Length: 538
Image (cartoon, rainbow, N blue to C red):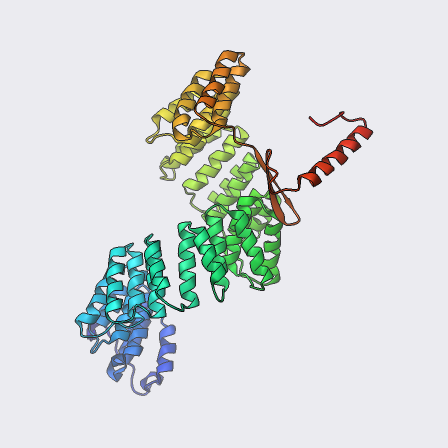
């Protein structure tokens, strides 16, 4: 019974000598913060036979795992006198979080080998381990065992099965489990809806959402997060507002999902409302929530507010600094972005590759080619970060904007991977600005393969020829564009009005009151005529 590890026991006269009631022992376990105290507690349990109580021993083993003492925990379990299902469950539950999901699956198999029967807790814990291993095959075997012992219809087991199948991309199998229960719990519904949302099956998620007998905050958050994740921010915000109208109070997680949608859509007013709501209702301003607020304000045009949130943070992570640097870069505040990077280094926060994407973007937007070259060089030499295609793309864009077209072209040729559409698009745009049709033709050839539906690429090269007075070549490009069936995509714009973001596309009158818009335009026209402005709009 691990006697070699036990410390000398306290004398009978000490306060620890009296056998405590179980709650006192549990309280003692909660106060154990290191191996020394844990061994002392173990030494207290063994001579009093408390280690033979599997409930107490399960709590002890759980505490070992929570302190990162996995080997000690497994040694105690291995030498337990009569392990039961409860004790097995305690270990199987803790092992995946300790990085031993494979051991958890093996231990689950040991339950039946020991003559015991898995219960409605054993199966979900084992299925969770299978998820950690990304092992749908193992999950199917556990599913088969649940059927054999008649627990496949248990609400906890069915919910775990749905989560396991969804995590492995087997949505249809998850739905079969879901449909197999005549009346599922809220957790089961939420698992199926979240699985659909994560997989991008948003219509199926919404259909179940609308049919769910009683929705809770987890349900709403899953749908909002799904829409935001799959770039449908308008619907995410619509569901979020509906949630508020139905009296469901958001928490930090639902706020994160809503803020992600706000950042995508540029919904500044809603972002400001969320910021105010957090303070009014005393929600925990987690680092993640503050990071999302910074991102929302920066992308919605209020860089001052973004910086205010950043400056008010007690704790900042690499994401906090990177998001702020990227926000400043987008607003053309390159010098401020680089000063922010210097502050990040002074705070001893190690940058990552995304940080360098933001830094190089700042250099690109502000035309700081020399500084950009320097940062690109020190990525590996000083920080040990190998540039990925995103950083190469920023560097190509920086050189192209600065007019260093040959250097940009050489960098593309020297990359250790194939250039993507964004990189060739940067070269095409640069060739248009600096009148280099040869480079433009080369870039367009690649873009025709990578994104043939993008008419803007053809237009850029056509404009390049037109700018040089080479009208035949310009017309030829447009003929090619028509011949392969590439149509010019209509431009889009958006405006936030009365807490709602309205999106407009050229010649699209399907979602907007054209008569009202025309009436306003006529009023403006009349005012301009009266003030001696242009005769009419062109």
